[in-house]
Length: 169
Image 1 (cartoon, rainbow, N blue to C red):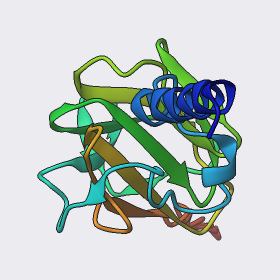
Image 2: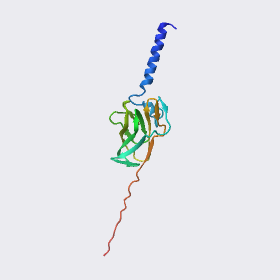
Image 3: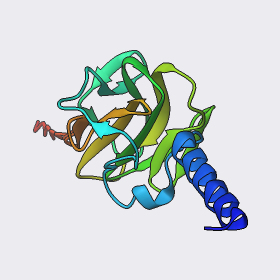
């Protein structure tokens, strides 16, 4: 191999390594959000949830049922992590400050360490909704593939009973 070919190969190798090191520092790509997020494209999957969890909040209260059309806060927490991607099977997620919207998913906006992330979710008109997340603890390891999830259902509509009283004189 000639000197110019060697330089070209070294440059190509350096660029490939730079792409590997950077990962997805500003959030996962939309292509990973056609359904529940899977592998982030780097690192190895760790077993279990790693202690990470998803909670649906109505004010300060954690809830497992939603009122159709109402807005809630979705919280991802459980220790230090660098990145995440969360998907909901219904309703509408909205990225918060320092986060990015990728279709039906919300993802991190930077690779800085974080211990919790919250964003808004508007409930659908009916049905069961599952939130699923992939959490990148560090570049070389992640948790997810169904291990970090939460399912919620619509509250039953309140029933109203009308009583008619007839008085005869």
